[in-house]
Length: 165
Image 1 (cartoon, helix red, strand yellow):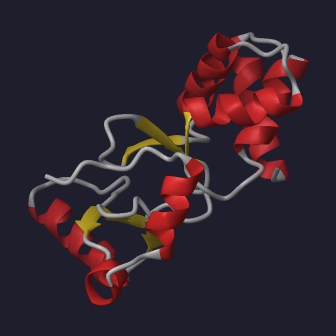
Image 2 (cartoon, helix red, strand yellow):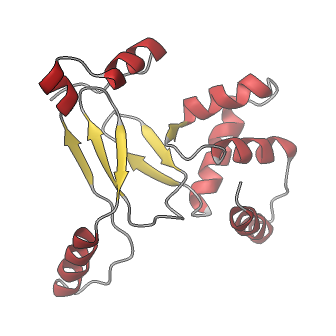
């Protein structure tokens, strides 16, 4: 975990009058151990593999704390559950492309989108603070080849796939 995250969290915890706990530290380390999106249940499963004495409630409270501290961002990837994005601090204006066939999520940045966001918000009398864009698309590999390795991997891992609209 990046030292900047640790410092910001330590300051936030001090301001809130909370104390550092081993369980909370372990959950936070697990949340930032990978540069990928996760749900609360996925984080709970990750934590439970290494430490069986951490409750689901502790994971949920810690996630709420990290969101409040502006260290994690809650995002909607269209699967009717809250997903957490641990890497928006490094890339604050990144966007998401979500495959509705296999569930794969691709992050991307685009200066044109940033410029458009800036122009639209200023024209309407606002100052942009952050932006996010989610594009839902069909998997090109599935359409062209009739199969997609991401779909196969998702099904084998038991990942819940999005429903097509």
